[in-house]
Image (tube, rainbow, N blue to C red):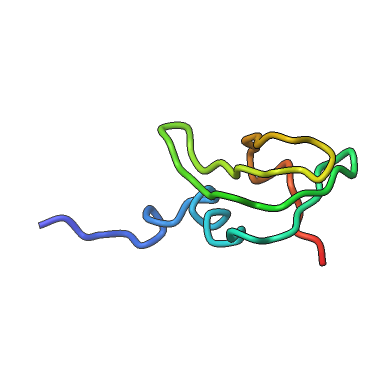
Length: 70
């Protein structure tokens, strides 16, 4: 029987999945502000879908490109 290593189950992508939640206010590197509408995962990892205040569409971002604001 193989021993399971808990470190293998936790990746940086999974930590970001729990950092962002629907409804969080976020800001991009160029100071565009918006609201998280979905946190999703695909074969490349976690991505955050944001609806920005100045744009009328939703865009997907890598969690490292966003920061949560008050």
